[in-house]
Length: 273
Image (cartoon, rainbow, N blue to C red):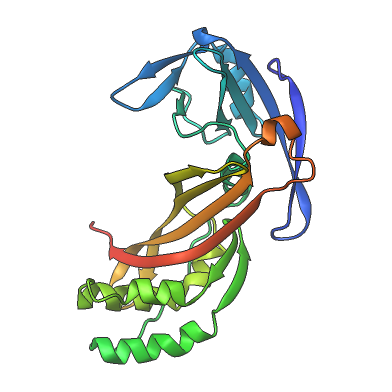
């Protein structure tokens, strides 16, 4: 359908062990994208509009790959789903296909398949001082510690997040809002976010491996709190991925990919009407 090249099944473990199915379409050559410096993106061109409409009309996501062969071979990716705007398609310059891309693609696949669920109204505390809120949140946070499997991946919730949320450079009001939302972080992680963004931070290569460090930001809108009304909740995760430097030559045989995903922060912000 729509000149697709390949069908792929990707194993996933959340919410149960199963597979995501997606199609793959490969385009090769410099004529399929034009660099847009103001957007820091490649604008997709010369892809049949009828094919794109067919891809969007099906429940099966399509992974569009563009092989740029000059000046060096580099493969860019874009996941096209029924929610993808069709007016202007583009490749992010950070969406280069390597082992670290798998986790970002899997998160997008989860988002595609999950409905947007509305959270019930959250009844927060009636405390006002930072010391009282810290005590209130500390007990609840202690019950959240550990690894939590969710649509974003296996998220480690540890004192790393607590230290980040309560550091001395934060204002007292910011600490109160963060710790109030922290008590409900698992409820948010179990839901499909309205928006998700993966932000590349650092890539370090050694003689044998490549380490990719980046941030994952999930945004949940229209969350109702009894003390502040409708809010947007921002959950930020630290992600670190390590894979063999010669992964292409070895095909990842006898050498896998490791991922660490841990909660860094959570914050709520009232939505203006």
